[in-house]
Length: 207
Image (cartoon, rainbow, N blue to C red):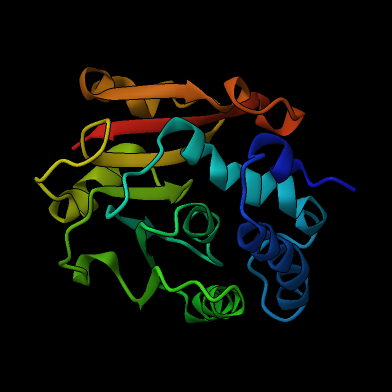
């Protein structure tokens, strides 16, 4: 069976295909021990978690040498799928929950990803600078901006200004209302045709 990922990303290398295959194999095994994905949703791993993470890659192809922080990564989303797709970009995955971060580390090791680092703890303790912060439905956009503003680098190297890229669901008009002057909201259904994405969005805010 052809993977849905390959339909949307037909130019993957053999190594990238192998990595995504390992994710599809290993996440259910780990999830049986440490709950990083809702157990009722694990059967939808490829579409609802891996492909969802890769929507960011349809919005922006990170320039080689970029640095990206994944805030509240949990078991590694969206950071790990993006790290597979962009081997020349460094991804720093941060989460307060050590058990979930352990799963992300194990998956990264199994895929031999050398462009990933991890931090167990609060992002407030992280002083490093990044081109972008990515996150998946962790908290409202304005609250996230306050926390990660200090982590956004001033040097620009990508096709869009540095900032915050988040994966959202449902109606986000209220939380984005006061950010309209510096933000863009994209329907993920513009990229992927699966019904899961009908209500899913990418919110990008320049910081």
